[in-house]
Length: 492
Image 1 (cartoon, rainbow, N blue to C red):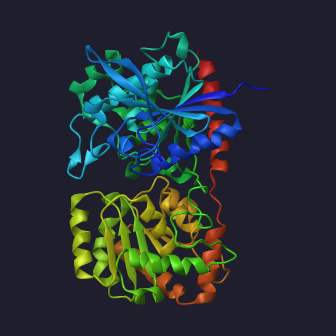
Image 2: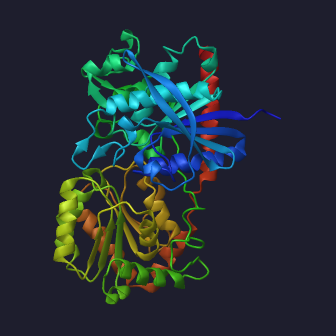
Image 3: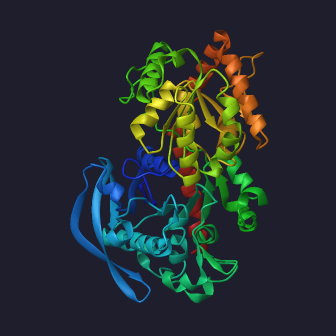
């Protein structure tokens, strides 16, 4: 029997410990599906305040590791927990870097010392792997916060027998966030000076940590096929399209899966009533409960209830929504929103709540329990994103029979098929151009079908029959790991 493939996950966030977006869902779910495929997975992430407050069983190991940063050796505490009985999670603790209210930025902007924080974390990942004696066949690292890992393996650790056969897969979840810092920060990395050049980590006289991942990783992937194509264009590449085209042969798209143990209305403990395809009556009870949760009138039970759960940012299409809000609220409908993000949207939605108290329920917060209630209780789910690498909420919505209205970009385009009433096919509604009128037209179309039970029932059934489980995605990742390991072998 083959020995298990040893996979080290390096991630800045993972559920159930800390989350700002879909990356955390991926990092918390994928290891659980890799284990039955013959992988031994260890996960490493920072020990944030959010982790401390999670209430989960986390143990301080009473150990520290030394982590070089500039000329200093800083100490990091080591904490431990588990994702599953055989999946260990280690946390890098240093309060001056990680004991903060938010993970990467406040509503007013990024933390000033993010370069120090995540260079420290990245170097600590490699130090900790050695400390616990976990010599990985492959490091699967995520986003700019871990982008330097393959640069270290190909420089500082190049002749280190512990990492001699370690391959790397770098996953881009959102290329707009790149970890850009002044060139004066380069010495902080401890990398050889020759790596600061346009073929390396330099980017228009700055350092770019995401670019480091793209340049030096053995294999790169994004979280949907469409997004892997989109980011090779100037419109979506955010300045990195050239280097991505150069590495095109090593760039893949694997659609995120969904953890249906966590997201399934048939056994979701957050819901007042469970339901499935055989008996949908619980969905109406969930709608009633959701209206109560937001203090909205019971009369809204009989009209379409629109839901959104999102980071409140331009990327998510909130500028389009802002343009059509007054027209939207002229219709007979309800609207609920959950999320945090840019201050201008906090302000906008607080105004919406005051202006339309009988129609709009707004919660400026992160609340996992309420997210489940919105997925179950809403009729339509809005995702008008400017770009969307994968998107998970539209996939959750499908499982809960909540029909997505999305813009045809990235993973939204890969997962949502526009409803065709003549054939009875499709699981949602899509619009192509990034345009407020097109968005409004698709909401109107959805509302028209909502009023026709024979079409709406068909749509709900199509949606709930869609399958985006992690099983398929985990198999695809395993193939990617093998490809990266073969590539690494060929280069040794």
